[in-house]
Image 1 (cartoon, rainbow, N blue to C red):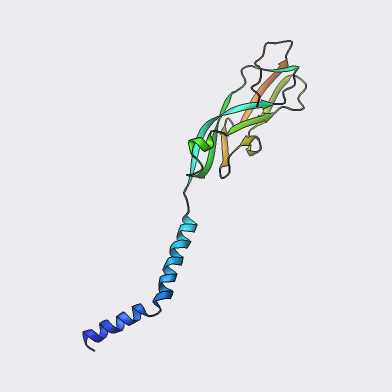
Image 2: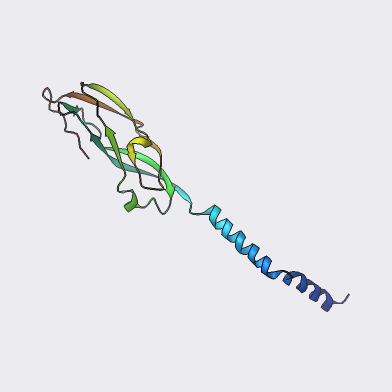
Length: 145
């Protein structure tokens, strides 16, 4: 077998079903892009704490926290500063009518997050609030949302 015949046979083998071969490469690249997608990142940000439905006869005392640090996960596109500017922690104090110390765990249920962002954890994991009668003490009025 001479060199020309070998090259010709190799060329025929490479170009046989060329359309299917090109289609399979394009599909493989598309599948890789779909699976790889945008990388997920984790970020930590201080977010404001808002207290809702505070009984008018009660006041938050002992310097209630105004911010907490949240760890959040999401694609790089959704973790932008402007997208995360609306994140906040909302504690609903409805039903609390008696003074005393209460502990509120921080979970996904009381964190407002934009689409595509997931709550990982918070620091601190819970808030300890001390409520006293509004007429008995000069407590801090709760920041409301």
